[in-house]
Amino acid sequence: MKRLASTVVVLGVMLAACAATAQSQRTLDAFLTEANRIPLNATSALRPSAHRLKGEAERALGAVMTGIREDRAAGRTPAACPPESISLNPRQLLGFLNGIPQARRQRMSVADGFRAWMASRYPCSA
Image (cartoon, rainbow, N blue to C red; front, top):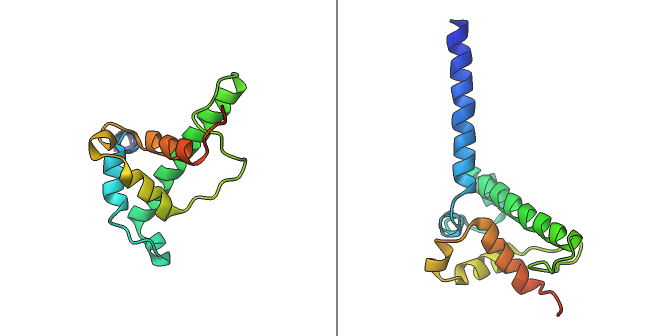
């Protein structure tokens, strides 16, 4: 019985890891489809879907910022040159991301969308 319980726990952990990986691999279009359903008001933060999207957005932005730091450290010109502290307006961000043609969004990751937004908002000087 104890062995069965540990097997169930291991399977649960594996399924959770697979679900997290699948969600992190979803397209920008899928992310926006869900994000556009959530109203931009204070009470939306209480929704589990909003909390999940916020986490996904934070991970994508973190990946973009890490790439920028790595490019700078390697002496390469990064995709964007943001200041140390940036302000993020959800309406403006969603407006930009929704402005990307759907056919292109279907091939982009969430991080790709955030990278494009950062490049448009904080271009590197030539």
